[in-house]
Length: 271
Ligand SMILES: Cc1cc2nc3c(=O)[nH]c(=O)nc-3n(C[C@H](O)[C@H](O)[C@H](O)COP(=O)(O)OP(=O)(O)OC[C@H]3O[C@@H](n4cnc5c(N)ncnc54)[C@H](O)[C@@H]3O)c2cc1C
Ligand code: FES
Image (cartoon, rainbow, N blue to C red; front, top):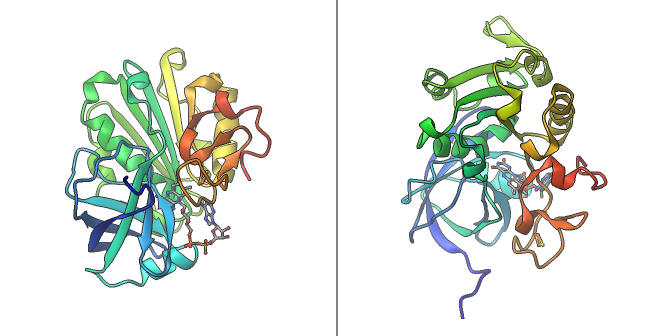
């Protein structure tokens, strides 16, 4: 019988520094690895531990997986200090990804904060693969400062694409930054979208997701049209240990992508 906890082996082929706290790890799995945008993996640092991450690479690319990781604690700081070519374990993919078919024919508003842009990069690749199916993609990305912006070389390429309307804002400006300054909620007014046929996708730190969701509700978005990427401490990743429970849901199995409609009556979803 297949051991569902046994990771497949991968080699850490490259490490890209995105900002002082965020790096992208390019992993070449030794077996073919398929995932859908929004699904997550458990990444094992052998002998140390494992942690959940959402791949940030193009799901259509099968021979490598990018995972963009913020240095947050034990596993992530050891990863940040790892050399190339070490062996890593990959379990998954787990959870439900973004329901792309529900976005077809719609204006797709995507709101990302900080390292939340990582899972959204995989989503963008998924949307770009069939861009004519979507009316337009309106992206609003917020970083703390200009130095914290990730994927700096790629954003201008995505922003220049047809059907894409992109705006980056930073919380705190400096002389090197000529773009918008202000919290992410300040760039959600006057959106070039038709609210009657729009969906919103939000990914970022809990506090950002909370205030963006409240703003979107204010703007007239229906709770069922707001998609949230939820995060909680995890262990099994398989709906068995109960670590990731919120209300009646297991984030690993029932999510990590939920509509606000599903979660709105659940207590403390932003903790
Ligand atoms: C489905 C899912 C997808 C994720 N995708 C990404 C990603 O693409 N990139 C990325 O950088 N991070 C992502 N995370 C968060 C990542 O899993 C945590 O940062 C990581 O587990 C921290 O592990 P650590 O051993 O380095 O830190 P620890 O030493 O375990 O903890 C450091 C601090 O972070 C807190 N923490 C630990 N785990 C989590 C968690 N899962 N959520 C929130 N706080 C936590 C702890 O309470 C502690 O305060 C994701 C989390 C989930 C659940
Ligand atoms: S992580 Fe074990 S039930 Fe979700």
